[in-house]
Length: 288
Image (cartoon, rainbow, N blue to C red):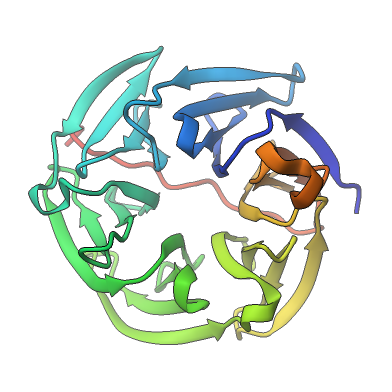
């Protein structure tokens, strides 16, 4: 595989790459600095798209109208369009002391998003419906991270990084309910921490390895099929994009300490692994 370094902004925590099919570009975060970057593969141009270090963005989805729905402190969700913010969800009262992070949208426009755990309480997993109402799905989460739906829309994967586990739930598209939680893959501590993830069109799960320096591909049966190594210890998340969804974009962290974290730490990479992804579902929060 030809591993390409696309952009290196020395991200402290590069995260949450997402392919915007309407714009044919990829967005990604540097979480602690409150920055969102954008890369246009057609022109080769990339740069800072948005910055707000006082209101850290932990993740986002693409709205049906093309805006980015930002996951923010206090459980707030705001739409970002042309540099301006519009409030979609003012807050989740129970989450005023923490913030939303990794998230995905489902086919009905709902958002599934986790929260950052604190000393006072573990993280949680929520479903936010299009009308903006939050529904608590899971408590006691140690390290809420990557999510993904199966191509047939029957299952949802969810990562608890602190436990080194990727869970699988049964997913009901009609109601948005999750059931039958089970441990799908358990990652040994010496292999790094499972972080962000994506699912390809064949149902394979691609899971980034924080402190593992790679992305690991698992088949639908949970067996490892492939590993892609990167020039960075902290590989944080991945997503398929490009005109044919054959490009895997991968974010990394540790850019403030490349001597220890690797020469590619904090950079955005691209690789073509020989499989294809699917378009991200679009959220419809506040759009009916």
